[in-house]
Image (cartoon, rainbow, N blue to C red; front, side, top):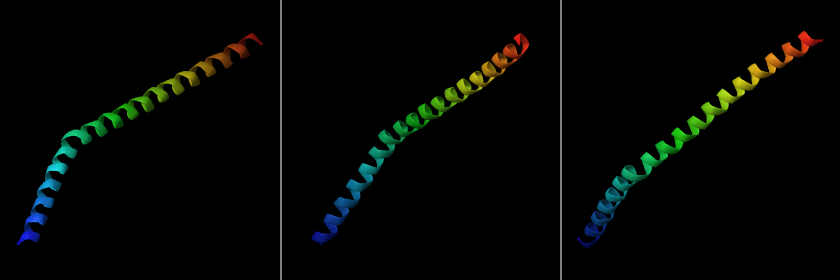
Length: 65
């Protein structure tokens, strides 16, 4: 019966730790993924802006020549 008590305490502590994990760490993981997605979006916007700038610059150089 003593071994059953030890297993029960381990199971209860595991459930409590899992609840803490889902309460604290999963929102932090979501924030990290959101920040990564925002950085990727800003990089894409910068890349498109640079592409448009290079196209305009190339047309100006061809028009001047």
